[in-house]
Amino acid sequence: MKKLLLLPIIASLGIAYEGCGLTKKDALNNLSQSIYVNINNQYQKKEKLTIGLFESFSKNVVNESSQTSNLTLKNVKYTQKNGKWCASVNKTDVQASAKDDLNFLLNFNLSQLPTNFNDKQKKINSLLAKISFVKGVLNNLKSSEIQKLTSLEKQLKDLSNVGEVIFNTNIPNATIKIAGKNKTYKPSQSILLPNGEYSYTISAPNRCPITGNFTIKAKQSFSINKDLLTYPVITFTSNQNSVNLLVDGKKEKINKPLTIKKCDGKAIWSMSFEDQIEKGEVSLKAGLKDTINQDFTPKLEMKKIKAKIQYYTHSKEVTINYGYAITTSDNKKQWDSEERIEVRQFNNYGIYKLGLGLLGGTQDKWTAKDMNELELAISARVQIPELADTTFHISKIPVIPYFGVEGGWDFYKFIDKGNYDTNDITSIFRGTIGSTFLLHKQFGFNIEYSKDFMEKRDYIFSMGLVMDF
Image (cartoon, rainbow, N blue to C red):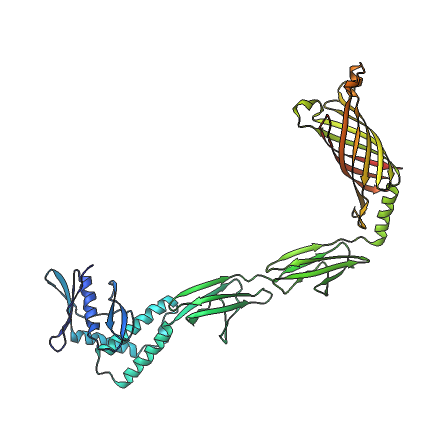
């Protein structure tokens, strides 16, 4: 460890303070230290001293406060002794520096402190060190000067024992409240507080408030950055203008943005029209923007929809579908990429329907020699016009889902070869799902998907016309 040499020259025996070190910088530091060691004060503190632009050092000395000082010494002289640099200054020059500092302090006003927190703390530390220096060096201070210095010192110490917090928000006129403080603050404002734990609330009109906690440490500055989000906004829409809307038990208007002044929890809503009612809930959070749509069908319109369904489900029906078939099996390529035309006739018995169909397919042209399929199929299906008193429809168009099976035989090879060998007949057995859309009680269209579970293993997608009588 670098050895530092301190050689204070006692004033009664000499006229100077002196400090030595390996460099001029060390010498100047030790000179300053020697001056402070010779200041007769009553309390043991840790002092941090900065000499001009030179480095800082710390040492336990007899002093009454822990400070940082920018001490300017006049007429410092450097000499070399025993391979070291020594810096010395006359006692009269030290007293002259102290008198300059005294004059500065007596005329100093707190309004002269920097507004920036960190700069302010540095300035306060410098001023406290100057006060300590002046009180220690000048023994003939007047009582009024001592009173002024003591008062300034107390004010500076109070300012040095606080920390700073600054709240930054996206709302310039937000209000900030800190628990235990009988005042409000604004964003970007410097807030000085003693050491401790604090809680806060940030609020603004039509914004969800934000709460939180923070810790203040003396001489430290930090920011809390928060964005205030709007209250949840929900728009309830419907195809009917006379819908009755209740939100949390209160009647509201549809097709108009509704601000809910709750930032968590749930909003309970109900929409009713004639004898129909729909209910639900929305999970609330700050900044939420949501639209809830609920369409209703007037009684008269629903009556017409049900009449279409009633007629259709008790009629004879012919369907003509155009489709496309694929198979993923390499040894079934003769039935892959097939265009298909399917004609079926059904008898409807409410939710049940039975039918017979003739189905053909080709990979090229619709000529006898180019066709690959000629199927005869018997179909059995279950259709679902309503479920749990719910009638399926899109606007005024009834939608009737169905599922079922069909089985039969493909006779194309049997006929095409001409030898009429029954081994050339291919069995089929498919599962089918689809939906019928009624544009009129006697006319509509359907979409359908089916899968063969026997020899062909094909997948068929088709759609077409529905005519019932």
